[in-house]
Image 1: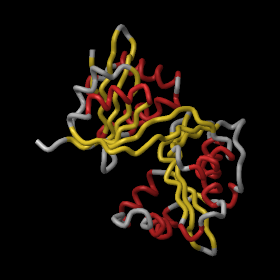
Image 2 (image 1 turned 180 degrees about the vertical axis):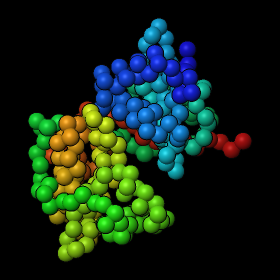
Image 3 (image 1 turned 30 degrees about the vertical axis):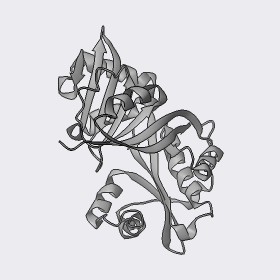
Image 4 (image 1 turned 90 degrees about the vertical axis):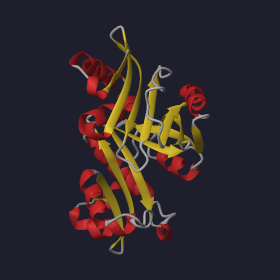
Length: 261
């Protein structure tokens, strides 16, 4: 039987909690989005004999909604809206999803991304003390470095992101030159991302330092740290490995754009 988020009852919620607790790193998005972002989240769940067989999660908080798949999804694909989506799927789901979508629109490849995680025992900090947590006092500096990646970003949007996500930054001669954040925080897992260094200051280990700082904060809070990095981004992968991160999975990311009616 297929359930959607509006169908969620106490028994199904218990099964979702059980699923998450059994593997927090792989189910962190569905758990977080249902709790904290239900108004911009949709979930399609294959539920049979008291067990969650599979699900497709769609998060509408980005310009292009993100879709995640788990388990048995063949029957769920017919339920999802045919709109522009950014899919994150494991190799085992790739053939099924591509086969379903290929005649319904255009598929633009983004490549393979590594899921990498670290725990307290394996973590190797790198000058974490040189990075500082960013607050509203750092808004103007934060806005300026974020604008390097997104010229459309407004000051108000930057203020919202800075208040919602936990950022660490590194200053060089009073200039904010590198940032990293935890954009999702649960007691068991923090998801790290938006790692960026001003091009003029790259090659100095600054990205490693800010990633180390936000990772250390996560571990001190009792969580594991998880991040995603493109497999072919060898320099970044090398940095994360040196911090103690290990690859726990690989996902294929692609963008689907439906045919015009």
